[in-house]
Length: 335
Image (cartoon, rainbow, N blue to C red; front, side, top):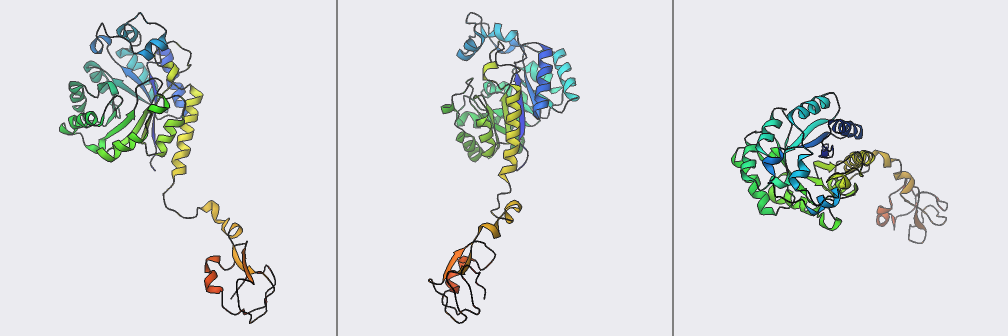
């Protein structure tokens, strides 16, 4: 199995503070993530003034009176911030990514020559936005939270019509509730996306804990995206549904172990268990004292360890043959 791409989703968990953003980069690197991903937006370009906050955003911020625009405006990263963070990542063992939410942010991110362009679940049904992204002609990662299969197919058609090849698109199964109830995770839908669309698949996780993304890798996810924060108790819309640094480290470690454990898929004894074959398997042995010339039968033969003699699967071939030697009880039968 190829290495799973692990994206540590910082999102807006920097709370608009560039120093916190740097600390998030440090934590993602220390955890062993491949990428750290932020969110890039001009609030007024993507949120109307009267848009209300989602229920989870009200709960996690503890403020009901402010609008979504007022909340998000405090979490913007400007172009200078992006320059600082992309340069900071260049000296780290973790790469920079960000998700755009408007046209000007697409243009901004394109100047950083990103490996992928990540399309958020919220933009999957945004036709002008999708066309603008497709014009970049770089590999696409697209989340599918809130979408049905037809909406996913329609979004992919936008990319295909612009010449983006299927092999350059990874579709992430996702649920956009923060945190996602276990009963709503529906990991099998990730396999449905793979089977029906013929694309590479992954999983963008908003559930609590690390079990679900680990299971997604076991099912074939090639990209895992997971929110993390420096502290779950920080004020902000996403902190409480995010991993803390030690949990992120544990998730990355577990995923790397799962990659190894999945193996080649060939059913055969592994090098580590070859030594167990003679110790744990069984051979045909004398059950009683057997004299030379005596006929082997079910009364004078039995099967016991070790497995260095005649394989007991040859039992029917041995029964009825004459003994060529004298045998004592428990002695391995030989011909």
